Length: 210
Image (cartoon, rainbow, N blue to C red; front, side, top):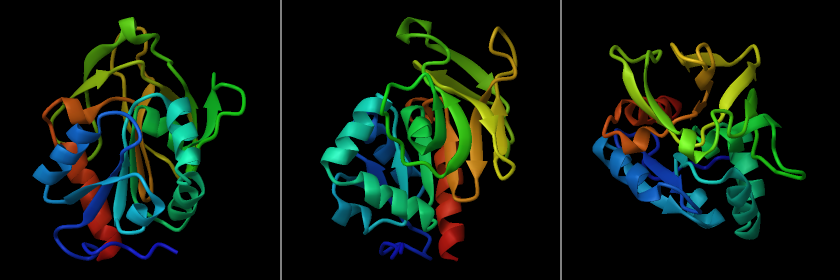
């Protein structure tokens, strides 16, 4: 069962950032700006103290191996199953996906998000790019930064498509989704200075605790 941290039901929820790899500091800073009590999570005991969790980018295979080493993989799966809000960015999206295309043999995920995600779908790091996206629940376009990003190939019935690429060779590709308490983006909102998606996630966490 999700016990919930000290911020559950308050205006300042406690939101963790999985601190195994990736832009941990940037996520912590952005969460602080949107009124959350942001903490790094590396151990099951720390996971048990938060109301929601951000899973940052990095290398999805490395993150899954480290989560296994730190005894976090099974607790993460259980917390997602029990309804903990989780926001996955880039590799974090892959970690939340039920199904992966182009994954390595034996690659593990946390799951919970009824999507099929393709790893490195936009190409290698030299093919990283930026784009303006129309994002559901946000009034103005969001300037998105893609770095060796995945995209979503298929979504289940319960999954809301939050954003797609508007133009270019990847036009129409799904790059942001939500399924109840789970939010995921192919891109890195933490590096843009735009905190609206973190604010949106913090609201999801608050709604759960209301």
